[in-house]
Image (cartoon, rainbow, N blue to C red; front, side, top):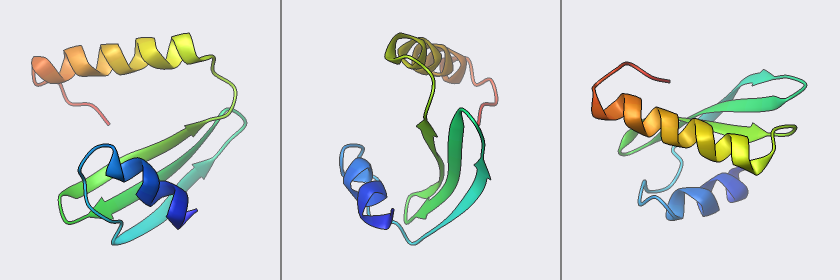
Length: 72
């Protein structure tokens, strides 16, 4: 899992994983807390959601971030 996480982090210039812990393992998602030198991040693996809904969620989170609305 660590190798997979570090590959993804390379795409976002977040550095290498210093530590990670599984937060939840559900029917639709697996969530990890990832810590790098640049902070803490949520690493989410969507097992059931179609890509169009994932893109919608990412766009929504981006817009909420622009108005400084607290998001996970």
